[in-house]
Amino acid sequence: MTVSRGPEPGGKLLVADIGGTNARFALAATRGEDIDIPPPDIFLTADHASLAAALDAFLDAAGRPPLAGVAACAAGPVAGVGAAAHIAMTNCPWDVSVETLARVTGIASPRLMNDFAALALSVPALGAEDLHPVGSRLDALPRAPVAVLGAGTGLGVSALVFGEAHEIPVAGEGGHVDLAPANPREAEILAFLQSVHGHVSAERVLSGPGLVTLHAALAALAGREEPGLTPANIAARAYTREDGHAEEAVRLFCGWLGAVAGDLALTLGAQGGVYIGGGIVPGWLAGMPGLFDEEVFRTRFEAKGRFGAWLARIPVFVIRRADAALLGLARAARDPKP
Image (cartoon, rainbow, N blue to C red; front, top):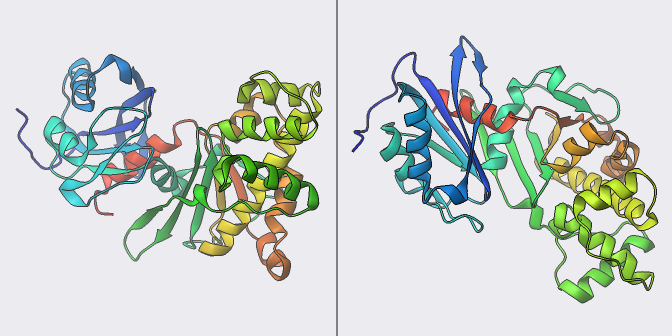
C-alpha cells in the first residue's frame, strides 16, 4: 500500500489524460519555468481493469520515480470536491477519482479536472509555433478571460480566468447550449433536426457525430438516402469536392462553430482570446489545408450586431500542439492550488 506524502523536490510530474478508448500517461520534468513533456505512453483502457491498475503498470515500467505532483483529466464534469472529487465516464468503467490518484501515487493532493479545463490551463504556456491564427493575428489582452472550445467526440467548452496569484480553469457544459439559425437555410435544417431529435444543442452538429448528422439532414432534405458515412469520410469528400452535401455540411459546421465561439466570447468577455482545440479543426488544419473555412468562421464569429466591432478585436487561434492538454496538466501538477 502506498503511503501518502508530499511532493518530492526535483521529482517528476505525473500527468494522465484519460479517454474512453485510450489513456495517455507521461512524466513531465521542469526546467525553471519551462516544462518538458516526453511522448506519452498510450494504454488501451480495455486492457486494464481500472485506473489504478493502469497507473501501477505505467509507474512500474518507469521505475517508480519520485513524484513532485500529479494531475489527471477526463471527459466529463467533475463531481464532488477535494478528496471526494471524481469523474463518472460514460464510455469507460474506470474509477477516475482523486482518491485513486492519491492511493496509487502517494501524492496527498493530486489534481483532477475536465479535459477542456486542462486544455485551458495550457494556453499561457503555448508559443506562437503552437498556434494558428484564424484571420489576422491580433493581440490578446493580458490577463483577460480566455475562452476554449473544441469539437471532437463532443463539443468541449472551458475558460481560463486570472486571480491575483493563480490561473483558474473554469469547466462547463457549454456544448449543450441551444443552436440558433442565422438564415433561412439554417432554419430549415434546424427545423428538420428538431423534428428528429427534439432539442438541438450545439454539440448535435458541432462534433464528429454532428458532422454525420448534418450530412444526413442535408441528404434527407434533398430526398436522398446516403450510405453510412464517418466524419472522416465526409471531410475527405468535402476536401476533394466530390460530394456537394459534404461540402455544405463542412461549411455549415464552420459557420455554426464561429457563431458559438462568438457567443462564448461575449459571455466570458474573452479579450484574452478564443482558442480552438478538439480533434476536428486541428486535424483538418494539419491534414486537409483549407477545409476549415476561416472566413466563414470569422464572419459568423463577428456577426453579433452592435458588438461586431468589439469581437473583431478578439484573436482566435487553433491549437496545433498535440500534447497541449498534458502541458496544462503538468502546469496544474506543478502548482497544486486551483
